[in-house]
View: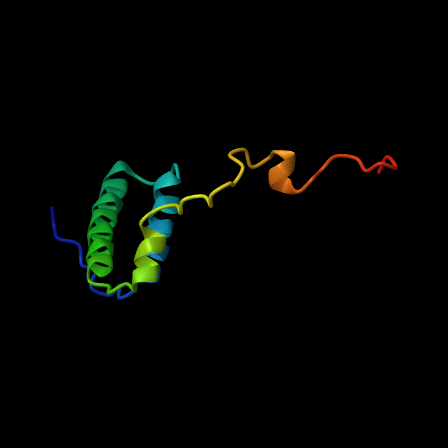
Length: 97
């Protein structure tokens, strides 16, 4: 397997865009198995470069907290998002509206 050159991709956005293109090409039923495997190799190389870019990025504490996962719900928040209390809907008013 020849090493894929991904040095032309400098940003995460460029890598993401190319990966989207690869996905579209692989989904095309007219693409040969050999071409699909070549695209797969390129996608792996791009993924590795994306990981390297993320690893080399210095995030602020706020960014790290946001990226680490979903925030804890505030104390007293309703567990069910669709409940009337969570949506602010109290049901029909006294005059039927």
